[in-house]
Structures are given as C-alpha cells and as structure tokens.
Length: 82
Ligand code: FES
Image 1 (cartoon, rainbow, N blue to C red):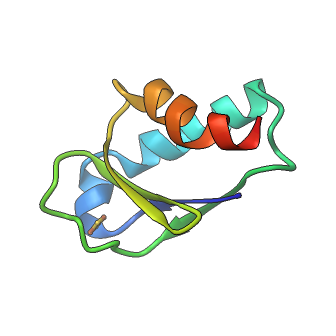
Image 2: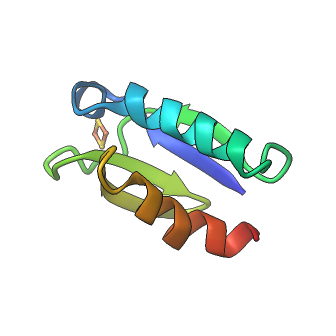
Image 3: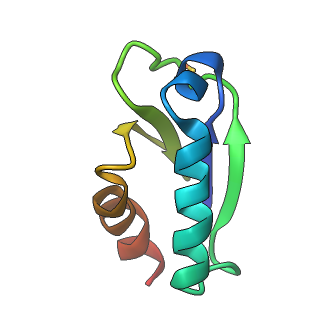
C-alpha cells in the first residue's frame, strides 16, 4: 500500500512533518515496513480543509492531525493491510 503525506506549503504549515513522524513510529511499532510505502507528495488540492491531507492508494483523506492520527490509521490503513 502506498501512503502519501502532502508536504505542500499549506499542509506543511499544518503539521505534515509531525504526521510523517507519527506514521514512521506507527509503522515501526506495528511492523508494517514491508507493507506500507510511505512517501511525501505535492499539494493534493485540498488546502482549504483543516489538518493535513494524505492519499492512501488513490483515496484522499483530509483533516489528519496528531489528535486523530491513530483513528485515521486504524480506519484507512490498518484495516486494509492487516
Ligand atoms: S498543500 Fe496539502 S492539500 Fe494543498
């Protein structure tokens, strides 16, 4: 599975770096290194929405924050790779 975190300027300001660090930590904790390909991507065109935008395979998910990260991970990623 390809997980891309938007590192466009708007998402960067809204915390992309922190979200990427959360992804790295969670992927390591759950031992999913060989199942998840984590990448950065340019603007996904959803800058107006609060939080960081990510793309999981071809689905764009908006509003990712450190506060809802685990919920997003469980719902959109863990359920598909487990
Ligand atoms: S900068 Fe992330 S959606 Fe535009």
